[in-house]
Length: 462
Ligand code: UD1
Ligand code: MG
Image 1 (cartoon, protein in one colour):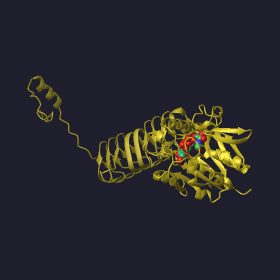
Image 2 (image 1 turned 45 degrees about the horizontal axis):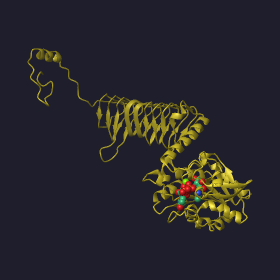
Image 3 (image 1 turned 90 degrees about the vertical axis):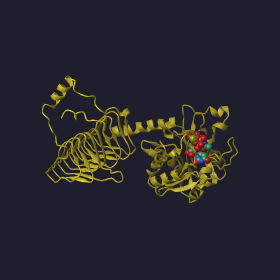
Image 4 (image 1 turned 30 degrees about the horizontal axis):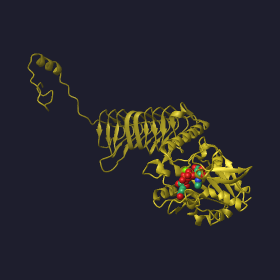
């Protein structure tokens, strides 16, 4: 059978007023990706679905996000919010091109799975003209009720318009629908706004299909897939459900999560086999951890690559552009940004490594700072392989420390250090024998005057 073509109309013109936010609702994130991005990712899984996104007149940011996720997405503007069917018809020009299947998806239902979209389309292939996703919510208030006769869906009645008997129906409209492309516009064009809210309800499509002797059916899914997000509490709840899915997938792929419920992942987090993640670790977007690595407690990783058998943390922060080679150790209170640490390099305590490269086997001592910013521009620090940076050194970029070189503890390095050299850049120590004893002697003899403010403590007695 030839593959059926598909157009998805994604509705994103709602105002999201219940979120109490100045950011468009569908740009809020869960697991490191916007709500709209999740929906588009589920569509993209199929690879061939054309995407039309319907936005409000002020929806530039939403349109830009859609284009980032799916560069070929078409954007349509719904001039005013007059209901879900009105919104779908804003994309009339795309529907008129005549795809075999037309999916209608709300942009605020981020947990829908690509397999479910495939099932909706299968029901069209099996002869239905309209397919609706149904579910049984714990509290059906506000949802449209699915009226069925046997396997056939005969109508959807919106909560506001439903009578007591209809409100007693537990099967509700999840909001996602699929239309046979050949019938879609014929059905949609007949929808009017003759209801309590004076809106054009997409759900009226079912009764219209029935009048046209077309078949409509409902597919039942679990509540999580059609969870819509209207409030910050629902956003947090969706985050929790998504985290549960991601943790399970990480465990299934062979990672060890000591306390999965405390680990937060992004949709694109990649954990290799035998990776161990200790409790309380956060993975922002763009993190890959290769096999055998350990991420210790209270670490935060974002846009970072961790090589095989590396150890990160506890309390490490890896920021975007971090690349750690095999067996690198990044220990407590170490921050790394835009930096490569080659195999076996170590920065075990209290350091900032930014805009830098650290050669294989190099050791960066406690308290080392790459001073990468001069107030205007960022500069790079290059540390050669097997170099040794003594504790509490400041490496003032741009600067290069050669292979095998040593930097003495407490140095402020402003010039390049050749390979295998020792650089010392700190005040020379002076020792004054008996000084402390003389001070105590003077004090006990009552000879000390009260200190004038700002006068050095040792000025009287040297
Ligand atoms: C809708 C369904 C209801 C279903 C519920 C599931 C209709 C008429 N009702 O109700 O049966 O149980 O979803 O969550 O479809 N939108 C626009 N433009 C508009 C109106 C809405 O783009 O003019 C978009 C919104 O951004 C949102 C989606 O359409 O993404 C759904 O709109 P919403 O107002 O949330 O519909 P519900 O009242 O929840
Ligand atoms: Mg809704």
